[in-house]
Length: 194
Figure 1 (cartoon, helix red, strand yellow):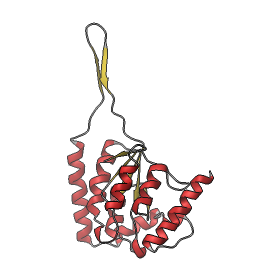
Figure 2 (cartoon, one colour):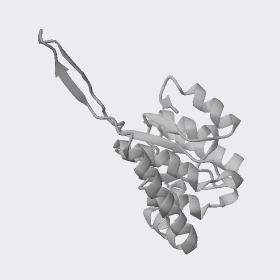
Figure 3 (cartoon, helix red, strand yellow):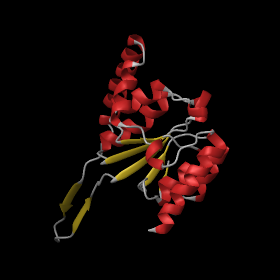
Figure 4 (tube, helix red, strand yellow):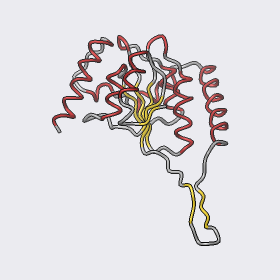
């Protein structure tokens, strides 16, 4: 209800204050699928090839790590087993500005996708509106579901608790600065962290 709206408003204020990005709604901070599609055309062919090669190698590696459910019963009829269930939704924090690496998208998104996570929500700050096309192209290539132009501890809070627009997640992964690391520690009781 109204508390969720308050969270969206706070996110907008912090995004204006720390990233100098001034918009009237969180919807304006979500990258459209069209914009994500276009990011692939804004990078060079060699960058595209390098990303595709990295994606395939990382998928190949993580597919070998997949854990399967199993069960058995012993002679006296006791039943044992292990059930592996993918999480419903994982949040992926990607640093912005000079520290924006497409590798942090690949290394965090692909294991989740391979494990069968149903929805991946990515947050990446765009300081002064600066959008890293390589990072967006990487997100598109690995099938990230939604991408928001937010960062900092406020983005971690949004992923952990949810807002009207941003759904809360089961686990948050990805690198960040000291503020992001501290925020991630603070929400540990609410969500899983890497």
